[in-house]
Length: 337
Image 1 (tube, helix red, strand yellow):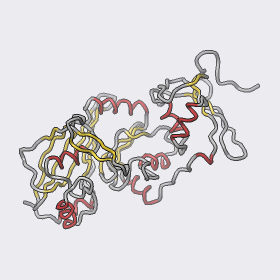
Image 2 (tube, rainbow, N blue to C red; image 1 turned 180 degrees about the vertical axis):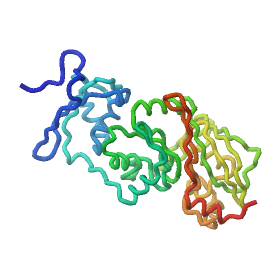
Image 3 (cartoon, one colour; image 1 turned 30 degrees about the vertical axis):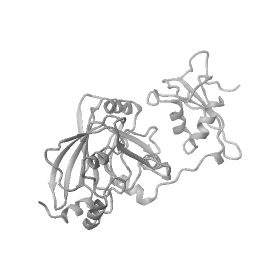
């Protein structure tokens, strides 16, 4: 007799959380029944499936949900259904040909990520993300930080980005290793209780009296698909605090602290103040590009230097990411004022 996972009513979570897989001659997995554990509870069904069915296109995942091939506790469910601990999800077989095989991180990327770890315990990982590496795949990027970490940490059942920083920005990046930690930190972000401090080298002499910029930001998508952000009265309220750290010949090293976390917020607020960031090809002036070239700068001079969080046990902790060598070299070559 077939070994049943279900009893009447709620699923019996005392059974094995996942029925052993069967595979066909083509290598496709058979139907799976997966019990949701406490760390997975609270997330949407579509996000749960994106993790379970790694490499399967999102369009395919939404299609099998709409067709009723995915069931939660034997019933149909919507993509936005919030899963609870003990729920059992029926995951249908997906042909291997329909899934893109994940791109393995090269040795160079693997070494960079391992060397970039600032802190790690059983629930949190903090990276000093290198510039030029996207935090996640998509939009022409086949492999991001989170995909590479999942392959480098195959024993971690849960790895999710707590927040994002731009591809060209370096510095502190938080990755949750437990769903409970992710929910805890997301609550701090929503309530603006997370400290986020950046260093940036900007065009010109930043006025010492300009300690904050409050300007609403609106996202726009160009016909090319590129995202651009601009100050607009109909945009979302945004505020950044600033402090001068060091003046150089024709530029200023500043500290920027986020009070809100909008896309490209520091880059657009510095532009709005008339002092765009050196190395910013999207929001800089022609003069800004010339200053960057003269300084030997080959990337965006924006670095997430510090992040501060309240931990679940009530303690407060800050993590500092040292300025990358290539940015230190640029500063060492500039005349101080």
